[in-house]
Length: 223
Ligand SMILES: [Zn+2]
Image (cartoon, rainbow, N blue to C red; front, top):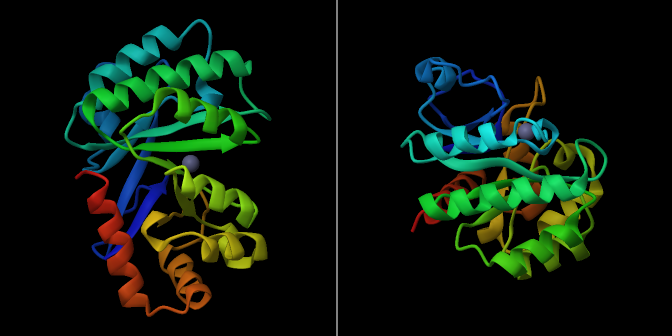
């Protein structure tokens, strides 16, 4: 079984376990919970840093608290910090912290969106010391940073960048496979099979073995 830990593509495939991401904007829930889940049995739910707003976040947090315990919600995310887009970083940090606490209370992993804010992310993890595993999605940075993050207990998820970025390939090679995931995110036309195929070449490991190991990583997030 392939695992796509973070995708925005709704299409289902019997050979792929997908964790479909749902962003809580202030109006996204409405009255109809079933419409919100859209028939998906495995979703991550969170307030994306781009969707954080001063006026709305109390309401957004209430919605997340309500949804987080639902058995279809497998992770809280994508949540995090972005220095290039979204509101003031202080507000992003406040909302990120609130969501980490929700993940802790329901004992579910966290899918992290992090752009140019790795120092802040590391500081927050050190401060809060969440038991909830933190998976940094769309990782495409240097090996040094990958090694540092893995040593601090983060998981890293690799996507489109792995196809043609040496940076991403080297980062993948530099950390334990037990802390690796793969994803398609919102890349149209990218299949999770392509990502796994490249990873299997980069890591010099059989595709079937890679699939098993990554799926095992997923199961162990909940132990
Ligand atoms: Zn995404």
